[in-house]
Image: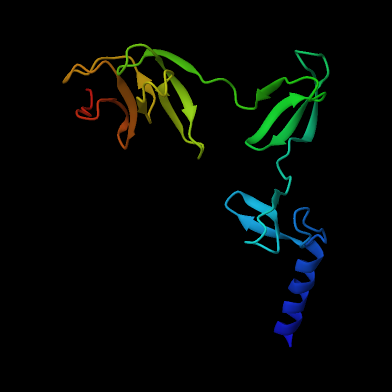
Length: 185
């Protein structure tokens, strides 16, 4: 009996969430479907009718008013939720197109890239939040290290970059060359 009531509750909940809306292409009923990019509305007559419409969850809606003036038009800046995450934008969008990322600019270490000798190493964050240091000439140069770089030469191989590595005995300098990895004394 408890299982039957449990199934009825979820059945009723599922029907309450679905929208009774006809497909603009064929007149069938639109249903909530789930794909790799999240939920969307799709026609119940699929595959004959392939109409889909995303559910606007990341449509640039305003999350919070920041109370600061826009540098372009002096309207208020707002925090928005967009397709690629949170960002700061002007409240008078689309008249003013000013946007700013939430993240601050990458920290330049002023250390010359040992691979291309053109760019400098900058601090970046991976999509998982881990800090690493990479050449600012990416994608032309793909040099990157996971630990903090130090502009010193390796005493064994002469590679122009060392990294700070945390060992059980403390922080030591290690060669950043993948072939060497010599620990400096």
